Length: 174
Image 1 (spheres, rainbow, N blue to C red):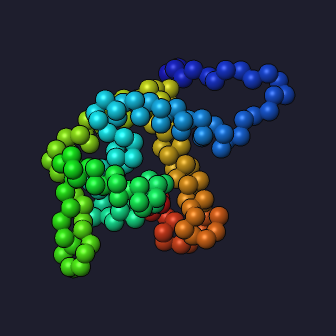
Image 2: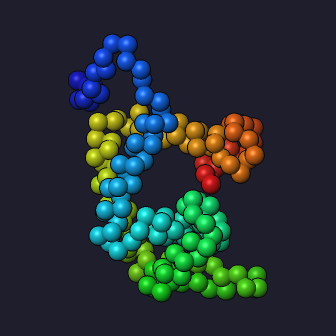
């Protein structure tokens, strides 16, 4: 079996390798540009898509939790949540424990929009991973998660402690 992957462009001998953090930044900017364009066709911003995704995956996260995940202020996330509710993509119900807390849930209409947006992201990832096999893709995902966990700001440290349960496989990245 031949390797169908195209090698990256050759670097001149002795040329410095770009920093990994720079490569990640460039990739993030390219993904974000394509994602912004794709989501706009469905009437959703990237932050709204993230909020819909998290609300679908988690059991009633607070606006503050969503804000931390999306790297926006709680005030900005409150505006996003209010707009999603106004458009009928989510609904907010009183928390079963009472109080003033409202739990946001994705509506049927919101799920339809979310599925269309997910397909748009699938298309972007299909292009991005076209020349990367499943093993390398899995390794890339695992290593990126390790990097993200190592730099989590809520731990108070900037190292990966494998003994800490919140740092293990499948731990949420905030």
